[in-house]
Length: 388
Image (tube, helix red, strand yellow):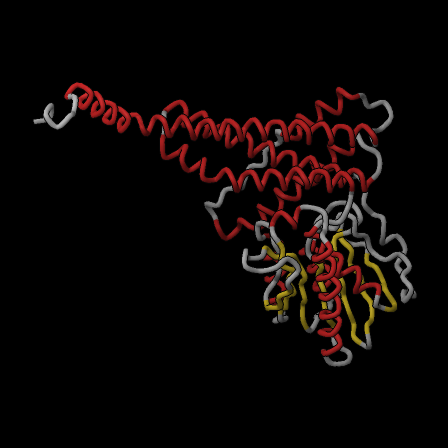
């Protein structure tokens, strides 16, 4: 019957065998295709990493100390890129926050101290230390992706390689962002995450009788007046790249100055949803402080202990925009937040005390030295960034 219908039985059997073979080979073909995509991404990321390393080395070479040679810079960079930070044990959850605080502080001080051995200038040290941190993060992404790529290839782990392939678009966006962040820190320009410190800077320009307290490392603690209100402003000390020690500054105000503010206002960048626009502003309650949560925990602890309400202003942006040079939309939002914070302070009763915290990386954003409305300043409060 098959022959009479015009079918060749031999070709029919061969076609069926080919289809069966393809069915069994389909997974292997998919793995080969996915592995090729991951391999291409690793090649791209490797080139990106090499270019970023070259740019950081060139920046280090421009501001290096006398007697420092290029091989010294290369050895230092390689050592710091492979620097490991080991998380503390959480077997005792009740005491894990102080452990994190201690390790983070040690990590940041070690990074800056190592860079300072080879680089002149406190601002350059902070900017380049952060650039190297970003480079370290990019290198870590490369190592993790390469690790799972080799595992998937070795064991032909289909679902492992498939999951890794699905993450490639997100990983590419992340690595491109980190690469741009390296350039931003080398140049020392404000980034999206500088929105909070820039609001604090703007607020200080509107204050009178400013007095600075040089009490907390890498952090500005300013006391001033605004329309009969007592205002305390905390921000990281710029224009070098740092996020400061905001929780220590809050502790200083509460425990050393014995001030009990009527409210605490935090201003920070926040990751927006895809349906939102960059530069949108949100108001709320709570401590708007990012990171792993150590500073947030400590600020909330003081606020809870003394029953001080927490208010927040958020500037919405993409994660990529937070790590790269500040856009015009974010800058315009900063001006709007400044006005709204001043309105908030003015709406409080006369004689009240408000604590404002500008949260974020203050790269490219300093603090007023002698603003048009500034009448006094505590000597030695500014320019305390150093390598010690």
